Length: 121
Image (tube, rainbow, N blue to C red; front, side):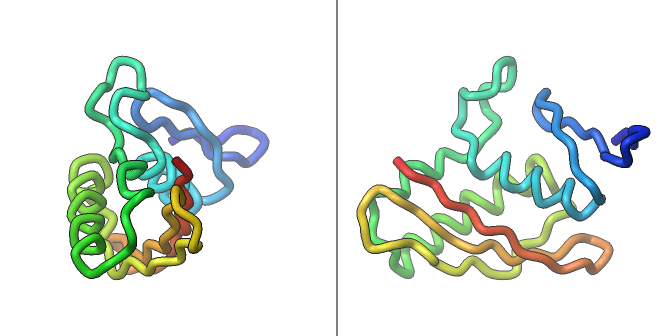
């Protein structure tokens, strides 16, 4: 990470550059980028991503939550191993084709936060 003269932190994940105002925001943006990216969308890194779009047409149930947690935890363990998943809360709307959830997480230093992910098919 590089802090520019404008106070923004420049960071890169999977070859894509972005900017944030704090280390915590860097982590949040990295999580969103990882979870909202489908495999094959990042040039030169075909395995990067989660393919969560496949969950958009499945009603949220206990089994789906377990599968979703497994996909998310595998991706985070692979690309952001310092992020620990605490909980995943469904916030999907009733209309088919949209997946919404809140990921509550803790960082290795004890910092806790959440990020809302909305994916539309």
